[in-house]
Structure formats: structure tokens, C-alpha cells
Image (cartoon, rainbow, N blue to C red):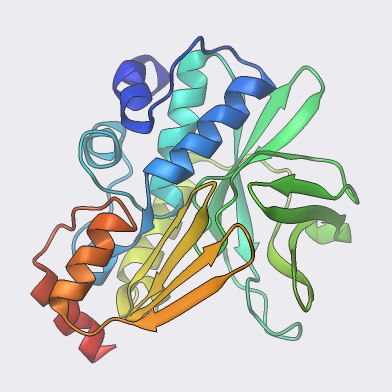
Length: 272
């Protein structure tokens, strides 16, 4: 809850120095600092640990520890911080289409995102989309190309399905997700989170994903494949070689202290 949120601790965690106002400048600064500091990661589902969405354990994990999380955790913490400042925030949910073939069946609404209403209209805020983290809020205007920490994005009217968020890649526009402007309740997130974090076929229980976005580079890890996409266009990619290598990458590239020994995580990657 916003009135229970430790805003001072959150500001210290992400390195924000006020003043904090319910305006676009503050929203943009917070989103950029959040994704730079708090990594996207799915170590809890991968290691069979619970993913809790109640405010106290969420703050303890993402704010009080050197941990991250996935969309339900990241955007819940971000939402509570925004509400504590005085922003008007609406919970939304999306159907992920990232890297899916155009004719692939439509999935469930299993991604959490936020609508933030400012004086100039609604903005999309999302600090938890692993695979292509957004470094800044996006104005909710269909057809308008916008930039967010090195990425070019746009919203497209998708008819009865709502809006489609796309990003421009070297080979063209790629859809991230599709969503409607329909408020979502906490119970909806609880159900989606339970399925996402425990289902035996979930991508989050079968492999390691981590991402952190900074002004200098986008760091991505999928199982043993570590990729650095630099702001100047360079791309470096390599395969991790051992548990110690994994531990160094999690520490240095992702600003992350894992909840289990690196050797145990490495063994999970061998299974994947």
C-alpha cells in the first residue's frame, strides 16, 4: 500500500535525489534509475522459491536487498512508489507477443504494466518487461514514435484487442505486448503470478533470465548466454563457462546477489 511504502529507502536504493513531484520529470527520472539499479531476474521461480506480491516481502526483496524480480514484483514496487509520491496510477495487464511468430496463438494476460495519468494525459510506465526493458515512460498516443534510453518505440491501435507496443529492431518493428485500458485487480495478478512462477511449462521455471538497462548498455542473460548491447551499437556476446563465471556476471553486470549458491543455479542451467 502507498501509505506503507518506505519511499526514503526506495530513493536510496535507486539513487534518486529529489524533489519528487507527481510530474513527467520525476516519473522519467524514477523509471530510468529503477531499471538501471534493480535488475529484472527470475531466480525465485527458477530455484523453486515463492514469488510474493504482498507489499512487505516485495519491499524487503527489491528495496531492502540487492535483488530484483519480474514484472509483477517490479511494477508493483514502482506503482507503490509512484502512489506514495502522489501519482495517479492504474493497474493494467498485457498479452506478451515478444519474439512470437505473428500467427502464434494469443497467450493469457500475464504481464503487469501501469498507466500513469499526468496533466497532459496518460503515460505507459513499465519497469518489468524482461527481454526489452523500457528505460522511460511512453506517451499513450497511437502512432507516435518515441525514444526511451536508446530504444525507439510506438503504440499501434490494435482494434478490439486495444493497443500494441512495438520496438524498432534492425530488421523492423517487433511487437512486445498487446493490452487494453481496462483496470486490473490485485487478485488477477495473484492468479497470473502463481501460474507464471510455478507452472512446469513456464519459461520462468525452466531457465534463467536477467536484464539490466543503463545509459551505457543493455545487459542480458539467458541461461548461459550473456549479451551486452552498447549504446554505440556494438554487441558483445559470450557463453558463461562455470559457476564462478556466473557469479561474477550476476554481481558486476546485474548488480545482483542471488538467493542460492552459484553452483546450485549453474546446475539448474545444465538441466535447462
